[in-house]
Picture 1 (tube, helix red, strand yellow):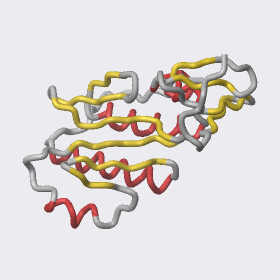
Picture 2 (tube, one colour; picture 1 turned 90 degrees about the horizontal axis):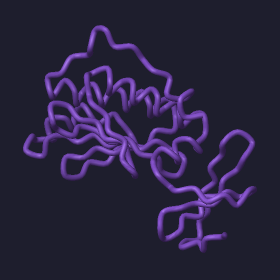
Picture 3 (tube, helix red, strand yellow; picture 1 turned 180 degrees about the vertical axis):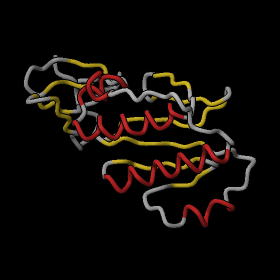
Picture 4 (cartoon, helix red, strand yellow; picture 1 turned 120 degrees about the horizontal axis):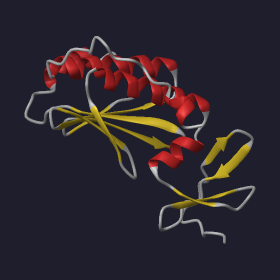
Amino acid sequence: MKLKRNFDVDKILTHGNRKLRGNFGPNGYFTSEDSGEIIEATFENKLRQSRDYTKTYYTILKNELMSYGCYDHMGKEYEMFRQYEKVVARLSIYCGRVRLSLLFDKKRKIKGFKEELKEYESFLISNGIIEMYVDEDSKCDNALKLIGILMRDLKVNKLENFVEIDYKEIYQ
């Protein structure tokens, strides 16, 4: 069963030697290029089908957020992180890259952070949300610094006994 494409650009995702063509249909499915297998386009499936470097950046960012005691919840489109009943961050996969969304308090003035954030590239500020695509080491370092700024603003310290988990191996 072949799904019709609803846009012109094909997204290529790889998993080992298999290439998956991201023909996203109206119901959120994509089809495998070689086997014709239909896969639901959930966050977990996108993560499993993504490249190794994407999984590496996902592992680094998730471990950093979890080291501050955040609770995670994996939804259909993204993974959400909470701190004290408040959503502080989201991770999603878009075009083979990890997208990090940090949610600063809307009531708080972000202008105070602008001097600190000026040196960073690839971020968007809109209604208290900072988004950045992580697909390079320098962007990953910037994302880790921004997570540190957010947690410092929330007055949260890192856990002393946190053990990092290799999510790259889990989602092979």
